[in-house]
Length: 202
Image 1: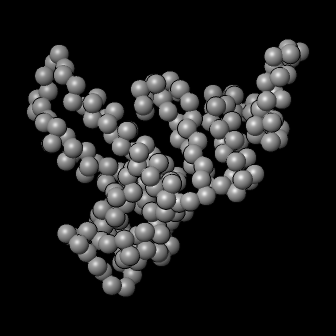
Image 2: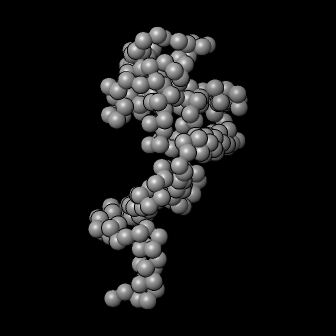
Image 3: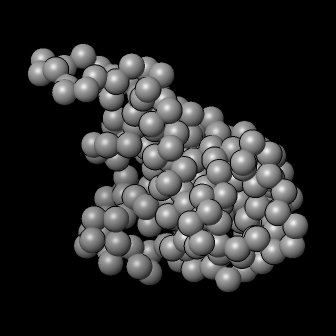
């Protein structure tokens, strides 16, 4: 039997989310220890439907990207420029955590200790490779012809806060150079990197 506290919380959830539909698969989500993500997803859908917003969300853990889940960050706007700004803020913060973690002094010295500049250069290349692999494996963009600008606008919400927008052109350039994507039409490069207006097919 639910206590008054539980009943009040149920009413609050219904008021915030706008319906009880989240309850249908809540037990299944609880069984797989995924209830917080299930609730966040329901809230994201409610915001999108009720206000006509585009919504992105990401999870925040105790140590930024590791450890116990602290909360889900939900961001909603009707303007894509707002997402571009917030996406890059989150990506920069994420990389700051990774950088601090990698460069922290250790009791056991590394065989080849990295300077801050060496770390930044190596990490930038790693992120571009990771993003390229993610795009190549993404069925929602595979086979579609579009500009790199259009590609990143459709692809970054699923990778919200993971990669800066400026990393998409180098990632697509890498795929083209590896033969895993093709340029459609004129191939325009600057400093050996494809420009955003170039049309590609992954």
